[in-house]
Image (cartoon, rainbow, N blue to C red; front, side):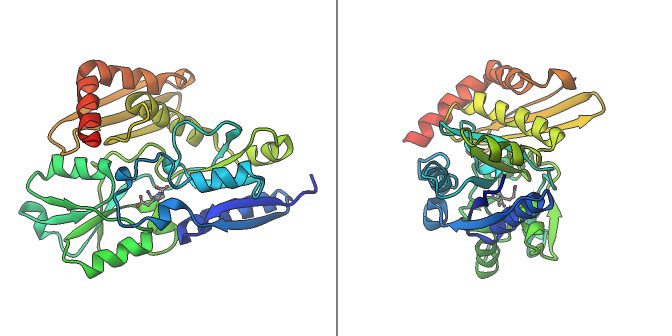
Length: 304
Ligand SMILES: NCc1[nH]cc(CCC(=O)O)c1CC(=O)O
């Protein structure tokens, strides 16, 4: 293949780091590439919580359009920002080996943990899990790219804010004062990067497929299947993490009330070769055990 592969990416520092990582991997395989950075709607609207914007795929839509218009050949995304159903004509081609999956708390001292305090996050999942564990705390909204959010934490009186560790590590801004939130269940596919291609571009799809890491592909498949079945197109506080040990795949998934007052969780294992449908089986078990009612009340509250 002689064509230059045009790599579409958002223009945040984290997105560019991820695109450059994919670029290097493709060039190591002998392909010629070029980075094309675009601003996405999700980065332009900073004053509203993400879940109020009412658009799924707010971070990915601009790049989807660029691909379908033929402005770029492939796009690199943080996989957790990608809607579980891709637009017609766009296919998931490679999931890169996953980095750290955990959330961390960046803080100004931890005394508040056992009393009252305020933490900042724009994520329904993080907010609900935080309030479930610390019902006396307040949670305020925090939007913007990683650097903006770190700066807002410095500029405000909040005690702490939650971040994906992978995001801070990648752009080398992990602060000194942080703790691992090993009890918090991450977003499905957190810490994984995905490369999407146009289904009709057989040569490019074949080239990009060489970057796929099978274990990460399988774990994120299970996590996103759990998400897709549970949420059915609506955003909700949902977390999910799968891990592989030898021939076994383990999954933990959660669904919470928006205010953290209810939490449904599931932990299950299966043989690795049964991974297809495993996420769905876990989601159906949650739905049967009170998840349906909880999802209905979340949808009602979000639409009111
Ligand atoms: N929602 C924004 C977003 N998308 C991906 C990452 C970090 C990298 C990752 O989790 O893959 C972040 C920042 C964060 O959640 O703190």
